[in-house]
Length: 475
Image 1: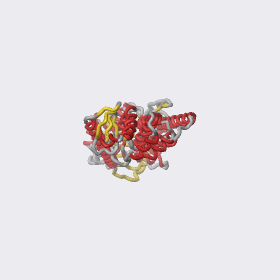
Image 2 (image 1 turned 135 degrees about the vertical axis):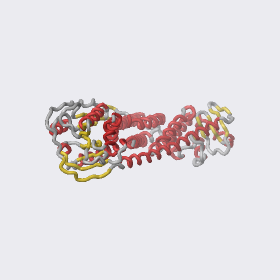
Image 3 (image 1 turned 120 degrees about the vertical axis):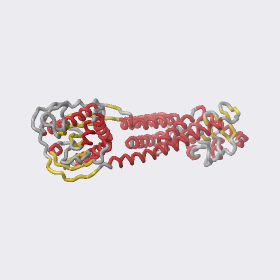
Image 4 (image 1 turned 45 degrees about the horizontal axis):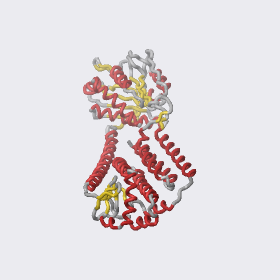
């Protein structure tokens, strides 16, 4: 979500900068109108559009291992900390932000609906027809405003024939050009992107460009430019007007006067600037939508033990079977973004060195070694994770982040109160050249943990939780 917000702000800032530098000084008003509308829409959708230029990398070949001895070296545990509240804190902050956003959007949606309803009520009043416009007199209305083919005007302005002629010609352009649709569109976008400052700048630019179009076409219709300018100057720019309606004096008077007196640049100059604008924005769109490849994040799931090494045993429950089931479920959850690769797909034994060699050859993005815990007392319970304090800062930080979030989220989803993360010098963690952690899913010496670990639904929950956390960290 935050990535999307950041991308839309960057995209719109670039597109708006292009408009201000290359198009705003030009009298290419119709092109400017569609540039603003189209680039606004494209900038909002480009972060969720992926333009793929390269095919995905070939799948990693999975292999089985021959039977040999498994050796796990657990030299020492350096530090232990409880992190079960980590994910709760993150989720809490996200929820506050989401509620804040929803409240803001709700306010703008109410405002949007209220203004439309106000215009609908005004349109029901009696009117007089003048060309294609329906003139509706509104008492105490300071400035004339149009909405589609309705023109709301103060009755006093109807008596000033020169002013009325200029107003009608101006507002008729708004009506025939369907500028109201542009206004409704940008106001609707604001309901959901009210937090983006460049949407507000786009809103101002769109409405200002409407006035430039109306001014230009009004003068071309044969109205005397001096009389027309006098009408603009004598109007009341700071008075309140009807929302969503196109006003005769909406934009700044100085800008409109300057644009009316400005002569058109040469055709070649306009073509060059419009062409450059298209090329520059196309570059912005492509870069914001570009996806170098669809190569997924590769996560190796090392199902501990196997074959002649059952791991921890409780009655007929064996550690090797529990972790293998979960590893195989994870394998089926592979998608375009994350590919799970298992070190074994059946009840085979492989040495620790073979596992490490296999993992390093694949150069994965993450390694998770699944195990079940045991204790001398049946009171011990919960999820634990171990990572190695590598000299490589990136591997160290990622191992700590993944292990913290996965263990704490698993504890929450399985209904366990304890989630510990520890630094340990396991041989697997020391020699693997990727972010890695050992995940102890629960204690086979605790009856409550056993019930949760052998339950098929809970095994799916474990696999789905790992997928969800890895996906969220990756994004």
